[in-house]
Amino acid sequence: MTELPHPATGQPFPSPVPPGTGWPGDPATPETPVARTAAQVRRLAAGATLAVLDAEISVCRACPRLVRWREDVAVAKRASFAGQPYWGRPIPGWGSTTPGVLIVGLAPAAHGGNRTGRVFTGDRSGDWLFASLHRVGLATQPTSVDATDGLELIDTRMVATVRCAPPKNKPTTAERDTCAPWIEAELGLLVEHVRVVVALGSIGWAATLRTFRGMGWQVPVPKPRFGHGAEAVLTGAGRQVTLLGCYHPSQQNTFTGKLTEPMLDAVLGRAAALR
Ligand code: SF4
Image (cartoon, rainbow, N blue to C red; front, side, top):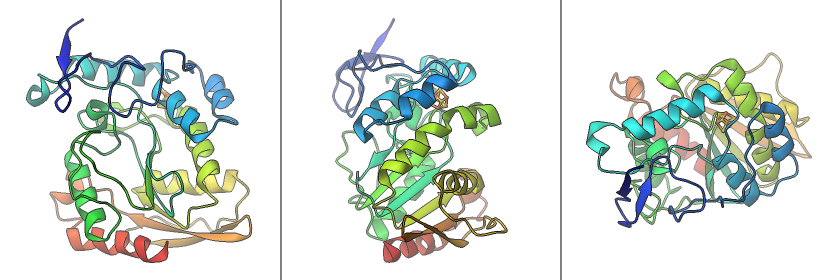
């Protein structure tokens, strides 16, 4: 298997990257248990600490179609990244371990997170998102290049609803359900700190409502509808969390003007103010 140099470290890696071989930010080791079925995802997610959860997510192989796709993309690569190794594995959550703000996206991009190993890092959606997070005071830098770029989120964590890059950015319902225990376990570990959840797109919005309801929280009835700037208050464990809707900063939305920088800043600024 061909090994290519990491663009920042120069260390050679194969694509996809085996766990525990020195990739910057890799939470796993060769001994990290691998979930190969939905039942194994549920079993491993239950009771894990955040660090263990990150590691287990990063080696998960429970969705055969997504495993094949993410690894095929990692081998074929986009021409502009042909000289780089690709992570080619699931993307764990990233950022603060005690976040006031949780950002919930859909899934990693084939040549973004699936290449760099960090959520929203190295693609055009991330360019928009991190620039805005920096403007509203939730990120230390406006750009996100790779896991060695020094960027830190401020009181903020990002997760994807589905942790593997899907073909055409569309996971199936079965894949979404198979992956759900990972985000349920992660939110369960974080929820005592979280004051605001920003859902990027309707799938993240629905996943957030489903996850809070599954934890026994009260969700408004009828179910709040997703929209840019939509807000809903979720109640549980003697406290409240505000859910904010935000159009996903995909090129489909940013190229067409459906989402502008002021629109993105307004929602993320509201999250920063509420935390
Ligand atoms: Fe595992 Fe989720 Fe990836 Fe499926 S989508 S293989 S459950 S990490």
